[in-house]
Length: 434
Ligand code: SAH
Ligand code: SF4
Image (tube, rainbow, N blue to C red):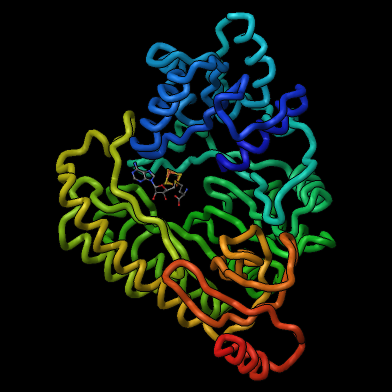
């Protein structure tokens, strides 16, 4: 979501006549768009400000995002910054920058009822795979998490606005859209749910692929599960954070799902879409987590077989209930558990990639690779696919997957997309042998 917000802030400032530069020393304005979810991300902003101030040039510095929201005026006290703007107020960035340029205080961490989206300029040029925020905020209050405080309560953007932005994204070059929200599957507009929205977006000619992230297990409606069977443009990938495999820890986290309800939910998804690739988020070292609790997480990982996943050491966040809990887990214990968890997740990712060798699929080409003529794109299962051949960024190309690595796969562009699967695989293997 920060990538999406960053793009939108760049668009607003472009409307003010500013052009983007990769060189911070040449910039008149630097916007640091920040994350507050873990302590490490938060501290990064202060070291970045320090580095920017060390250089001779003296740009205006704006701190945006959730660190701005959480720390507000404290940032101005702690570091020399000119603008502080929260994630729900960045449509006011031009006004704040103008105020700062006049030497006035420029701080806005309001969470207005009137959402920022209506005040943003239209989308003009975007990458083949584009983000689209449809939902923000969270009402779930997991005991470790700052999101409900920094992004605010759950709100959904209206149906018409979302469909219009999706059309604009397609006109601006998007072939794939990833719908975003802190709990994206909580999206609703007057009783219509995310699956209804996805069905409507699937009717947009020129839009080839739809994804969504991040979803919450408790908002996984039957309609959304069935959309994975019924809507061809909806990609076979589901990111569904679980955090822990121990019911005791899930309860202390206030996750409101159990290990078993989570696994049964995945069974239902797999029943309608057997090839679905599964991803998740995990936290190790939540206060009170014992070796036995952690073993339950490892056994859940074994039971799911993720195609990829994110895993984090628990980070105590100011103002959250978990930060004050007894039995905080020692740093060395967290390190060691994270290593074991990541070894298991890496093993499963490599296995998923290896199992896709011989598959044929469409790949959306997104960027150039390091080798001459190489392009990197995404498979329907969100794997990075490396290919060498006649294709351009933005092309959707028929590819046979020929080799697998730990984090990506390699493929060959297939010349006759309508050959039988067997022929295709044989050809792909021959290409590799050659
Ligand atoms: N709404 C989503 C998650 C959004 S936050 C959900 O609940 O599924 C993204 C991820 O950051 C979370 O899934 C969690 O794994 C991680 N996270 C959040 N707070 C954290 C903390 N205090 N310490 C470590 N990881 C955290
Ligand atoms: Fe944070 Fe997700 Fe829990 Fe909301 S549901 S509090 S965003 S982890």
